[in-house]
Length: 165
Image 1 (cartoon, helix red, strand yellow):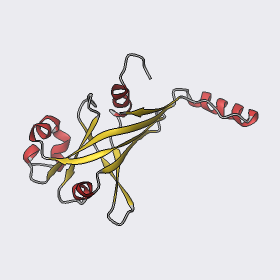
Image 2 (cartoon, helix red, strand yellow):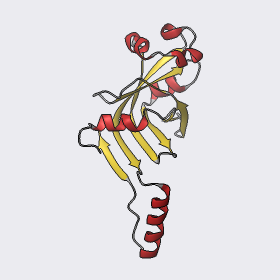
Image 3 (cartoon, helix red, strand yellow):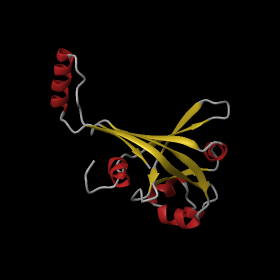
Image 4 (cartoon, one colour):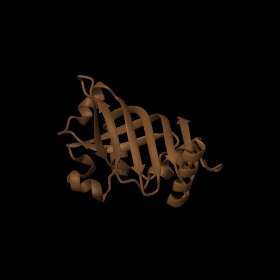
């Protein structure tokens, strides 16, 4: 991690350009279910909160009200960046946050704007995050994996960190 960046800044740097996060929550019968959602906002902030807009017409908000334990995963295979975030989700009616986060892309789903009665704001308060960031080029990765296969030692590729938030 860069010495001049906080864990929140480093996490945001890794996920900000990834279009969708997969939000996984628990169904009442215990099974896990994931939804692709667009992360809203321009920074993670010091409190470590991710924001998503969801439709009241779906079960997502109701399920999160019942059990807010979630995981949000992000991946960018082209950059070899993988992030897994654990947190507590709450459905918020914070109109200031809805107005601050609302954007032209959200209008496609919620034509009534931030006051659209179908719009629910989900806040994921991050408790833990883990990431893998492979900086080596593909040829270097292949060389290191081949060398590891010959030597019997695990290849050392990129950066793997856990972040308690």
